[in-house]
Image (cartoon, rainbow, N blue to C red; front, side):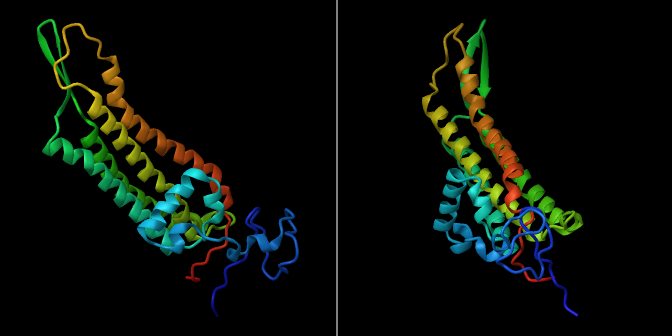
Length: 246
């Protein structure tokens, strides 16, 4: 006998199997038809897994960060690909400043002289950004797989594995945004900070702030994404999956 997946209310998780679409959930009063997977239109990436679809998904994430969770179709394959693409793109974008510094750029952000001693303020962003993104990719993929495989089915009520992949795919968009923001801030800093040695006694507070700004922006956007995911995921936590029954 084949397995059957219970059809649940997306708001409260009540089992709606066999209930008419015209009825209301007996537990919370939500219309049954609102919990149908077909009610979710899907995000641009799910309609077109192309660069344009990716750009449209990033735009949707920025303009309607809550709505994207309500619109996504709960399926593992397309959202797993989105997760991999976003993480790979973040790594590639982060390589840009590394390449610039390594090939044509200054390794030192600025040089100051204090009491006759030369101090060199290194430009750490390229190396730090590359290391962070390199670590995020395997950690994220392994973590999502473990949660989808072992944790989600043991929740009460059980979660579809696709919910985990959808959540990770959407939130990984923040990695692209954060890396892009960091590189843009780094480019601005790199273009505005003078190359000559600062005179004796000159204040370097501004330059220290400009040094930290790109990395702070990167980490800030990732942290904001985590908060958003925890808040907005209530819209798809109990959603009904389109994945085939395992």
